[in-house]
Amino acid sequence: MTNNKRSAQDQFVSPDYYQIDDLLQEEHILVRASIRDWVKREVSPIIEDYTERAECPIHLFRQLGEIGALGPSLPEEYGCGGMDEISYGIIMQELERGDSGIRSMASVQGSLVMYPIYRYGSEEMKRKYLPLLAKGELVGCFGLTEPDHGSNPNGMLTNIKDAGDHYILNGSKMWITNSPIADIAVVWAKDEEGAIRGLIVEKGMAGFKTPVIHGKWSLRASITGELVFEDVKVPKANVFQAIKGLKGPLSCLSKARYGISWGAVGAAMDCYDSALRYSKERIQFGKPIGQFQLTQKKLAEMITEITKAQLLAWRLGTLANDGKASPAQISMAKRNNVLMALEVAREARQIHGGMGITNEYPIMRHMMNLETVLTYEGTHDIHLLITGLDVTGLNAFS
Ligand SMILES: Cc1cc2nc3c(=O)[nH]c(=O)nc-3n(C[C@H](O)[C@H](O)[C@H](O)COP(=O)(O)OP(=O)(O)OC[C@H]3O[C@@H](n4cnc5c(N)ncnc54)[C@H](O)[C@@H]3O)c2cc1C
Image: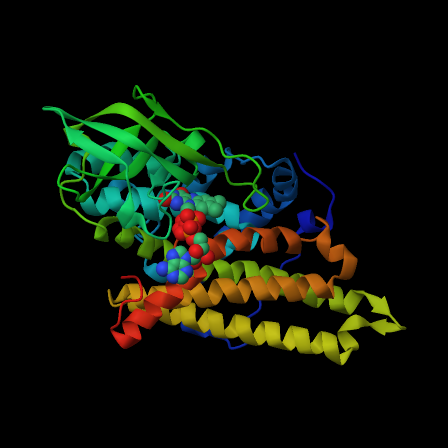
């Protein structure tokens, strides 16, 4: 299913105002070229239509596996990419340049499902799930948020009770990316001592349901649902033994937030690129609108902010490669780069005038998507409080 809209033709040219490419290795440039090609070929021609219909292009899962976008920085021995953190970031940037929903499909699978299985799962779990998840033959989701516990997951009510050779799981999760199409769910629940535990729930287990959440005006090409558990029998072998407490889910979120800090730059680059092109083509008062100082101010500020965000992401990537990127540093990059992208999208929308609200151009879709990105994986304000806690040592949450 393709369309003839201008957005479907995808003339994207990547901005690199500070020659940041010089900081990348050949491997990074190659990865970027292959993902960019795939996005131009497989995502751009269909994404506006899927977004309009609020339908998830599920067929892309296997392709995401083929291009190495699912768990790219996890080890090759489990069928994953074995790449460094900068390659992982670049993959997220290129996917989100196409659409935040497509990046979300890959982020959830790689960072929120595969990563905890790799980090906290038994050898048997790793061998059973990781190769299939890496290929996109299995789809996973991550259940942390609950109807009454979003920013404060520690208050979760979902719980497991020991029943001899298995646990009984009860509760519900809300806003779960991929849940209605997922084969497995990594779920966080409290045990009888009140400790948060991670476990794998499989589709088809009795008492487990995944209703779809309808009516989203954001991330429309990504499917979102609930997870409902009514006395679900979960084998003990499905529970992560290597982790207890909130640091389990938070470590996964750090991995995903790192990817988002790169991904948001991709969405911003797409909006800027479209606005720059439009500003040279659109004639008003006898000249291109790009010749007016007010349009130039918008474009100059957009490329300045994109360049700062690119440098932040790159430096965070080098820290992550050395195992030194702290959760607070990741929070700062996620928060800065997502708001930057949203503001770039808003300015780009103005440059496109009335055309900016249509799906002839990618702007409005990115803008609507970025409203979710600003909120999920820790809201904009929660990340500010994390930075505040880090610099003052004083906890605003308690
Ligand atoms: C499309 C989509 C997909 C998602 N996918 C997933 C997923 O796959 N898995 C998953 O587990 N979750 C997922 N989420 C959930 C997401 O992470 C939560 O929406 C987010 O953490 C915020 O929780 P909330 O919506 O309950 O908002 P709330 O926590 O109720 O926050 C509402 C407002 O209050 C503010 N606030 C809260 N506490 C404080 C405070 N202490 N100080 C100041 N302000 C505060 C927040 O910043 C926010 O502005 C998804 C959400 C969306 C929209």
